[in-house]
Every structure is written in C-alpha cells, then in structure tokens.
Length: 324
Image (cartoon, rainbow, N blue to C red; front, side):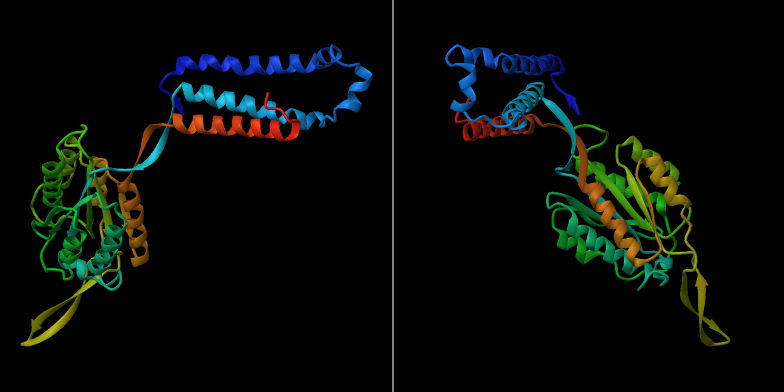
C-alpha cells in the first residue's frame, strides 16, 4: 500500500485526538447530568446500556474517521487487472519429432489442444497471431481478434524437417513489434509463446542472439517444452527392397528453450503429459492476460469510512434514541 498524497497522513492525528475527546466527555458525563437532575435519581430516569455496548457507536465513528483520512491521502494498491490491447504471438513447432506419442495422442496434437484451451481463456480484446516452424518459420495467421481463424489454423500434422528455434523467435518478435511497437513504452504489451520439444538442429540464427534481440525490443518470449526423454517417432525405410518401420528416439532437450526464456525475460515451462501441458497453458493464459499495476483505491477507503459512520449513526439512533 502506498499513497499519492502521503503528507496528508498527518491528519491521522485527528483520530487519537477524537478518542481523547470522547474519553474526556465520558468522564464528565456525570457532571453535565447533575446540572439538570439529581444524580441519585438519574438511574431511575434513564435506562443506560452496558459500558461496552455504549462505546460501540463511538468506536465505529473513530474507524470511519480513520478510513476517511486514509482516503484523503489517496491510497494506492497493486491490483491484478486485465491487460488492454495486448498481443500474443504463438509459435508452434511442427517438425518431425513433434509426431512422437510420448505425450498423448502426439506432442503436436497435445500442444494444439492446450493452445485451444488457452485461447478460450484470453480476454476478447487480445490479438493473437500464429506462427509455425520447422527448418524455417511461417506466419500462418497475422495478429487478429478472431479466435476462430487461429483455432482453424493450428497444425494437426508434423512435417519431417529439422527445427530452427532462433529464426522462429526472430519472426515471432518481428510480428509482435510491427503490431504494438518496440521498447517498453506506453504501447500495449506483446509477448511470444513458443512451443517445441528440443534443440535447434539446423544452421540458423542462434537462439540466444534471438532472445537478446527480443529483450532489447521489449518482447518477452515464454517457452514450453513438450515431451519426455522416451519419445520416439516411426519412420519407414526400405531395406532389401522391402519397407521397414523403424522407431527413432527423439528425446527432448530443454537447453535452447531455457536460454530463450531467460535471455528474453520470459518463462520456461516443461510438460511431460497432456494434463501438465494443459496446466501450463492455464498458467500462461493467466500470466499473459493479467498484470499487477498500481491503482488508486480512494473510493474504496471512503466507502469503508462511510459504512462505519452510517453504522455508528444507526446504532446510536436505535439504541440511544439520538444521533449525536
């Protein structure tokens, strides 16, 4: 909690002063009553509530005064709010290893289902773009508010090519910057979510270099590792003139994805099952859709103050038949 006008907190001295004044008035109540009635007869003329009950309205008034002063000082609190006008660029790896079925039904289809679930949770004011990549990236859907376009374009089949993570990061960041602008300015935020199952295995832009460029441009890249060390894909080869199906191991490797997330200011996630992947995207959706920012809560403080004061007035009127 902070205050936009902290110097006004000096007025908090009014609260203990009011409490002292109330105590003084209570102690001299008998003297004031003696001026218009004989003290010995006073108990028979007026039924007074117990001391504890009698002080409740005063306590409520003091609490109301406390919150009123806090409201005057314009309190601010960090609250979670929905980002406005943000853009998320999804970069999905559809290289050959994404056909492994260690994450059911396959790495790619599990990632597709999780992305679909994430899209359902994002605020409607978000723009979403989709990039797929193998040995080169391709912008499949430019930034759009139309979720159905992105959902329809999500890949369903892996392509037996290599993986180029660095150029995929660079392409996704370029799309984000062209949409919202570069740097940490007043433009809407943009972020990249990259899904893959391993290392870059083709000559291209170094992932670490791409990540540093992303940080410089103010676009964090969060990465998601899909799969396990036991992944394998089936490949049909011809041996002796006859087709033969071989199982080729495709274990995951997180190093490049961790580097990209760390160097760009994003987050790294690892998901070895479909359920874990869905949870990752639930967390990602919440993280990307909301931000913690300072908001003035003067109205809340004044509202609480009025609630205490009104409660004190009502109790005083009902119990004591007076409002002062």
